[in-house]
Length: 156
Image (cartoon, rainbow, N blue to C red; front, side, top):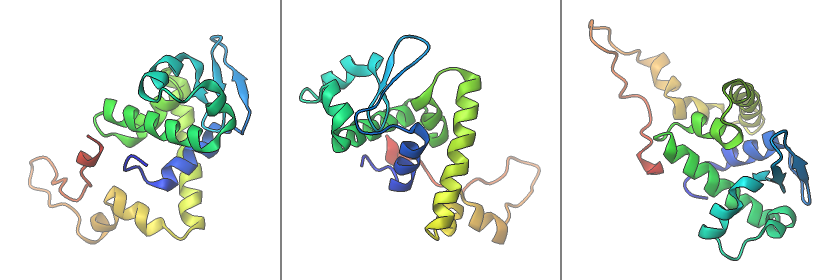
């Protein structure tokens, strides 16, 4: 959905830990709802983009929860000018310490998922590591050539 790799979405789902019908009370008094743990503070914005989706659908309809959760992640990635991992951290929290712990947990899960599915080459290609090992950037005294890194223009 929304041009986001499904392994990222399913890892986000694993990291959030939500289930059908789950409601998790946060320390700030908001609720995380359903499989993708959509925060109740975002319901008005969700409603403005998806008028037919209510908190009930987010809680009890996995498809609606995944659709809205992936859309929300897409928005966070755009807000971070295409930085996927900053967008993933924003999906969970704005608190720096919480974000750092969340993204660390996410990366552990994401790496395990890719290894389990035989997709580590995909991760290397996605990050540019496959080309860096074979053809390291030339050191010229100027900024390193970053042409091996994937463009995030598709998220705009």
